[in-house]
Length: 123
Length: 107
Image (cartoon, rainbow over all chains, first blue to last red):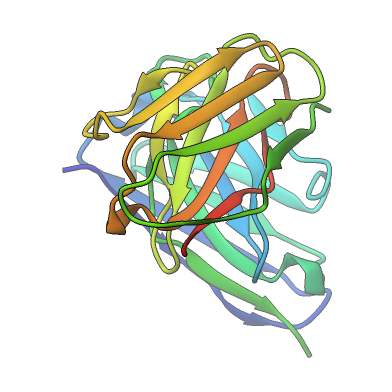
């Protein structure tokens, strides 16, 4: 059974930092691109970042470019999202998602999702 | 950046009714369009990809159509478990982008 489990959410002050982790199991993690998506309270889904299977291709949404960094450790079956210079508008539930197709090319069809971790940015 | 616009924002429907949701892209995304279902407190669920291909385990009452800039998700006979928010999502260009969602609520 494929499982994605996010960790690391919590309360952080504006300007602060947080690192989210997503532990994957049930599939060959090193063969699939991964992504992060968030949902702010009362808002829709917002794609944030994606990383290829080998980690060599990375993309960001403009809203987080320069503040967030995605990375992965294929030996630990884990993808990370390092978040810096956090703002109130970054308050959201953060989901990691598995890309459907195997291979280095990133095609952002997400077939499995974690249940999310809540990040609250507030003083 | 391609902008995805969904309509209507909210749809009030009775169980058993046929439901049609619309999604429009600001420029062509070919058939690179997916639909997701989102319920409160749950992870999103992939329903449709490639504009018309059902995801694994998705019931046949869900169908997708369209290409280019106009897309439709149809639920042939709404079940109680289908009340949720539905999002379209284009993956033709970077950055990928979700529509604003259509909430399907009980009438």
